[in-house]
Every structure is written in structure tokens, then in C-alpha cells.
Image (cartoon, rainbow, N blue to C red; front, side, top):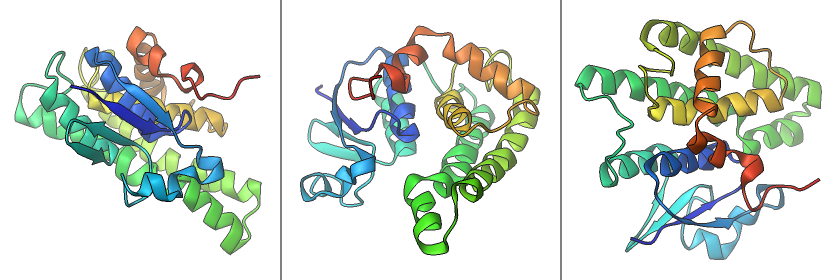
Amino acid sequence: MSLTLHGYWRSTTAYRVRIALALKGVAYAQVTHDLRKSAEREAGYRALNPQGLVPALETDGAVLTQSPAILEWIEETYPNPPLLPADAKGRAIVRAMAATVACDIHPVNNLRILNALRAEFGADEAAVNRWIARWIGEGFAALETQIAHYGDGFAFGATPTIADCHLVPQVYSAERFAVDLSPYPKLKAAAENARALPAFAAAHPDRQPDADRA
């Protein structure tokens, strides 16, 4: 099967998908859409993804959108190694942890939201950074409790899951915006353990072909 991932090197949602593909050992091509230039809004890409967002994953006969759905498809199509626990309760907990990032943290800190704060509400960069830290902090506080309860080296258990695919990119974003992570030691440790794995390292934004070069 031929796969093409449409993304952007610093997109945390595309980062999630890169991690999952790397953990599964699945080869894919990449097409970049520079979000700073609104390339994802161009007509050619909208023909693939009418929402005009990244990521999108082209497969044989379909274009998949929304990273949580893409991750579920990857898990079902390439089941080894598994990124969801074997039991129903464990799967529900992992999906909830992932949703804390995907539904409650990331959407309100998305670039288009930050640009709207600047353009429509006159927020300066200090205000934008406070906004980012607020929502990351609220979500990370909840995740810290869950990781303390369910983690065993990773966000859930002793092997990477879809929760880690969401957590590591969100930690990357938090670090970009200088969010204080000291209140979340269990979360930080889980992210560091994940980032030490080759698959997570290969998916890092700085190692992507479209990354800014100094």
C-alpha cells in the first residue's frame, strides 16, 4: 500500500501521525504545506481535504483526515506493535488521555485560533502566550494525575500507546512556548521515555525534510 502524508514539520497533529507510522515501521512519502503561508488553504489541497487542514493521509483509494481517525486507521491496518491496550477499559482510558490533548488542549491553541486572537481581539504576544499556557496547564494537570495512576514508564503502561503519540507533540509545543512543565513530573518523565525511542526521534519536527534550517 502506498501512503502519502500531507503535513507540515511543526504541526503537532502531523507529528502524531509520523510517530504512529514510525512505531509501526510503515514507509510513507511526505508533502508539505507551509501553514505560515496558508498553503493548506490552496485549492489543490482543498480538493484532497475540503477542510483545508493538516494532516491528511492519502491511501490507496481514499484520503483520510483528522489525526485521531488516522491513528485509529493505522492501528487497525498495521496492528503490530499495538498502540492500544488489549482490554476494553484500557483502550477507553488511552483514548480519553489522547482526547484530552486532541479535543481540549490543541484546538484552542491551533495557529488559526492564535491568529484570530491577534487579529480580531488585539491580543499581544504576552497575552497569546498566557492563553497557550492556560489551556496546556489545565490539560496537563489532568494528564499528570492519569499518568501517575496508569503509567509505567509511558503515559499508559510500559509500552507506547496512542496516548504517547498525542502527548509528545503537545510537550514539544509546550516547550516551544516556554510553558513551565515542572508541576507535571510524571508527564515529563513519560514524554522523555517516549522521546528516547528511535521512532519518536525520527518523527521529531527538526528531522523532517521541510524543517527550517539554520
